[in-house]
Image 1 (tube, rainbow, N blue to C red):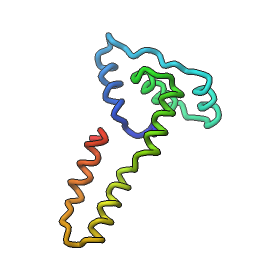
Image 2: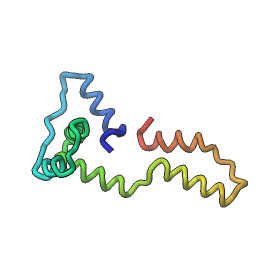
Image 3: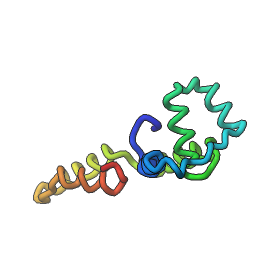
Image 4: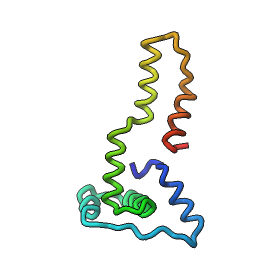
Length: 112
């Protein structure tokens, strides 16, 4: 999840561009340290999680927890496309513009 673009990255980039208003340092609590060592997180993944946590104003472990919960509740873009495909298969008379569905789903998730 850290190597894919997330909506919070817009905030991170804006703060980096402004320079004068830098993000606060992330709170790296005990749980975050355990997470990093247990899963041997690569440095780029760790840095991304830390920057995103700082941008949201929560500890790294709280940020990761929130993201895992959100991911478990939300299907992927592939799931969305699959569901529309099932609808069209069940009712071939539906005229579904799959390119428009994909663009809308990506836009709704803040990916485009």
